[in-house]
Image (cartoon, rainbow, N blue to C red):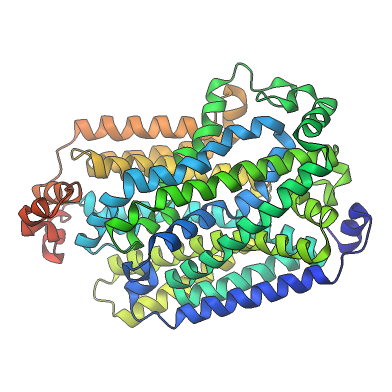
Length: 530
C-alpha cells in the first residue's frame, strides 16, 4: 500500500492535519509512559504496578488492552466480510470483563498476593506445585503472545500507513519502536496509565464516528437494505450466502472466543493481580461491561456500514478490508476529527501491544530467569526483563512478514486466542475453583489446548464446520478433568492456599494456617519431584 494507492481509493489527498494529530498524540502517550516509568522502584512495580491500581484505571486498562488492533482494525474487517453475523462475537466483549472480575479476580488477587506471585506462570507454578508446569506455561504464553503481538503490529502498520501515506512496512516498524520505548521503560505502570488515557480517546472516537457513518448510509434501515442488495445473507445472523446455517458449533466458537476467552488471556488476568484491594474489584465489571458494549457492537456495525460504502474489496487500498475503519473516518469526517478518531484507533493498538509486551517480558525476567538462576538480583532481573521485552518485540515485528501468518488481522486474532485461552482457562478456573486439579491435569490441558488451537484452524475448521476455539476448549477441559482424576491429589500446602483464596472474610482469613504463605523452602519441597 502506497500513498498514491490510498489517495486513489479515497478520491482526495490526505490532509496534513491528520498525520499532525497522530504525531501529537504519540508524543503525549510517550510523555505519560515515561512519566509513569519514574514511579517504578522495584520489580513488583514493573510487573503488577505495586498492586495499587484503582477500579477505574483497572477497568479501562482491561478494556483497552483487550480491544486493541484486534478490535479497531480486525473488528470492522470482520463486520465487512461477515455482515450482521459478526454480531455473534460482540456480546463476548461485553461480558468477558464481567467473567474475569466476577469469577476470577477476587480469588486470583488473594492467591497471588499471599504466594507473592507476580505473573500467571508463577501462579501456575505455585498452584500446581511444579516447576515443569511453570516452564510449560511460559513457553506456550510467549508463543501465543508473540502471535497476538503480530496482530497489533500489523494493525499498526495498516493504520499508520493510512494516516501518513507511508509504506506499510515502514509504518509497521515505526509503530513497533514507539510501543517498545514506553513499555520497556515503565512496565505495568506505564501500560496502566497510558491505557487510561487511551481508553478515553477510544470511546470519544467511536461515539463520533459510528453515528455519522450510520447516518451517511441512510440509518440502520439504509445499512440493512444496502447489505441485502450485495448479498441477502449479509443482513442476517447467518452470514454471506447463509454459511452459518446448520453450523451451531461454528457459531458457538465465534461467540465464546471472546466471551470465555478473556479468562485465559494473561495480559488481561494480570489486571486482577494488580488491583489494589478486593473492594475495588466490585466496580470493575460494571465499568468494563459498559466500555465493551460501546466498542464491541460499534466496530462490527462500522464494518457493516463499510460494506455498504465499499461493496467490493477492489475499492479499498490494496484490496484489503483491514482499511475499512480508517477509510470511513477519512471520508466521513473533517480532517481534525478524522485525525482524532484515528489517533483513538492508534491508542487501542498501542494499548494492547504494550500489555502483550509486558506479559512477554515479565515471563522471561520473572519466570525463566528465576527458575534458571533463583538467586538473581533485583537489578539483574529488571535488566533481563527489559531486554527480553525489546528483543521479543522486534522478533514479533519481523514475524509479521512470514507467509504462514499472512492470513489477515482478524483471522490471526482468532488463532492467537485459540492457542492460548483453551490451554489456560481450565488451569486458571480449575485452579481457583477445584482443589483436586493436579499438575498432571494442568500439563495435559496446556498441551492439548494449545496444539489443538493451532492445528485445528489450518487442518480441520473448514472441513468440520467446528470453530477452532470451541474444539480446543472442549478437549482441553476434558484433558484437565480426566487426567486430574487419574493422578494423586495436590499436597496439603496447596490445598491450604486454595482454601485461603476462596475465603471471604477476616475470620476465615485469620484461621488459615501459616503454611499457606508458601515459603521458598516449602515450594521447593512440593516441587522437588516435579
